[in-house]
Each structure stands twice: as C-alpha cells, then as structure tokens.
Amino acid sequence: MTVDSHAEQSVGLAAVERVVTEIYVPLTEVERAVVWPNAQRFENDSEHSYSLALTSAALAESVGLDPAKCALYSTFHDAKERWAHDTPFFDAELGKTKATREEEGLNHIYVDFPEMPIIATTVLAYEIQDDEEACFVNALDKLLATYMIFIEGGSAWKNAGFTHAIYRQKVVALREKIKIHPDVLRWFDELVARIDQDKDRLFLPETQEVIGPENYES
Image 1 (cartoon, rainbow, N blue to C red):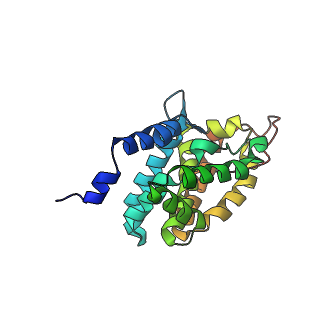
Image 2: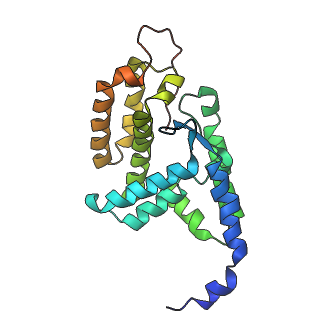
Image 3: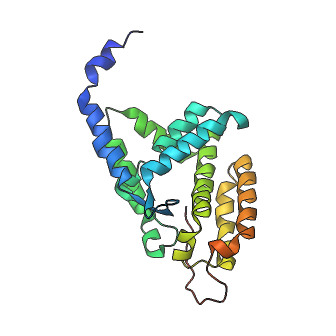
C-alpha cells in the first residue's frame, strides 16, 4: 500500500504532537460528574468519548447505521470541552455559562486546527444533528452517562441532592432529548425501569431534607 505523497509532505510529527498535547491529554484532565465504578476518582472526557465510540460503533449495524461514522462523531463530540470543560448536571450556576463556554470551544476548534479539517467538519456535522448517526450518538451519549451513574451506585445523584422523586421529575426533560433516536429511547426506558427498582441504593432517602438541583443536563 502506498502513502499519498501530499499527505506525507504536509503532515509530520508536529501534527501528532498537537493532537496528543492540545486535545487528548487536556481532555483526560477534564473531570465529569460521574464517579468511576470501583475507584475513588471521576470519569474524564477521554474515557467518556472512548466509551461512546466503542458502544456506538458496536451497536450501529444492529440499528442500520454506519459504525465508522458513529465512532467518528463519538470521538470528537466533546472536543470543545478541552476549552469549555464539562458542565455537571447539578451545577445550576455553571449551567448558566454553558452555551457561551461551548461556543468559545467550538471557535477554538475551527480556528486553531486548520490543518486538520476533519475535526471541525465532524464537530459541525454532529452539532447540526442532520443525519441519523449524529442523532444516535447524541441520544446514546445521554444514556451512557445515566448508565455509568447507575452501575457505580448513584454517587453523582446523591451528591446532587437527588431523591428518587426529584430524579423522576428531572428525567422527563432528559427523555425528551433522547427521543431524537427511537431505539435509544427504548433502551433508556428499560434503564429507567431498572433505576426505579433499585432506588433505595441509588438516591437519598425521601425523608431527608435536600436542596434539589435546578437543572438536569447530560
């Protein structure tokens, strides 16, 4: 197999270094609100993006989608958080600046990496949500965040002051977002049913006085 001579001349080690040091490593330092199962640390954005790429690509053909496109969307879907950082669903104050921070992150992608147009074009296509693969990844992203909290034991929900009743109120808005892909919505409804059955393990007691979160983002 031969390598395209133009690509060989235009891309060198410096490009590798930029991807690793300016995107990958910084994303490993962005902590999410999700506590990592069986460990005293939080999931980071690189781990989340890989789990989404792995899961979406593995399941894509079963719902009639392109695995490669799903993996590509998943890989870059949170690239803007290298600058914007994650917004925990229970942080109402941080949620007020989410749109502005993410817009600034998108601008960095468009301006700072002109030699790697695949990043900007993929992020833009994902943001537009104009094909079924983008919708699938978007919905699966939210399901996976919920599932990771579920298998860990609900620490993120407890830390946010969630009783089961509060969760059931807030999950309505999350379900509306996941409706963008019907297969993922069906899986999410199955997961919520399991969460309901395991509510004593996952949430604060209903009798405990808590301050409920104002926002539920994922």
